[in-house]
Length: 132
Image 1 (cartoon, rainbow, N blue to C red):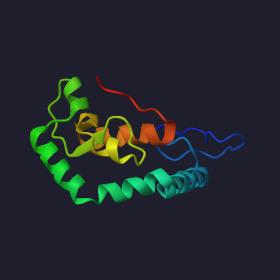
Image 2 (image 1 turned 60 degrees about the horizontal axis):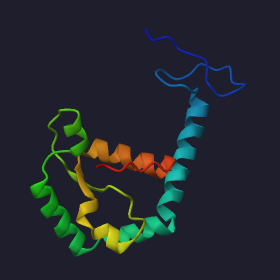
Image 3 (image 1 turned 45 degrees about the vertical axis):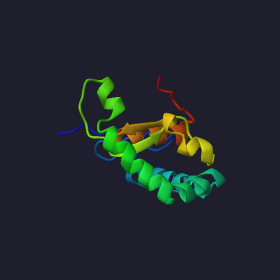
């Protein structure tokens, strides 16, 4: 049986949900705030410019060709793991810059979990990490 803790929200004395840090009410508030932040991030000028670039034939063809030559995840490879790459990541965020977007020296192959982790770090924490 898991030990339940008190909700981490200041002033709340309710028990947290199993495996969580908040009670049901505050967990829902946290999820609602997270969903609103994600929705706002997708409406930004840079996000909208990126959506148009990702829809181009040049990107789709370039991505397919890149993944056919770079079949394993770079990040997992640094840990000694062999994991299939399914995503092409821009090492330095392009922020809608067409030249940076199509610069293949700025591309790396990642698996979905590594790409999601890196993107979340960039979007929510502004932390782009340059690979050498």
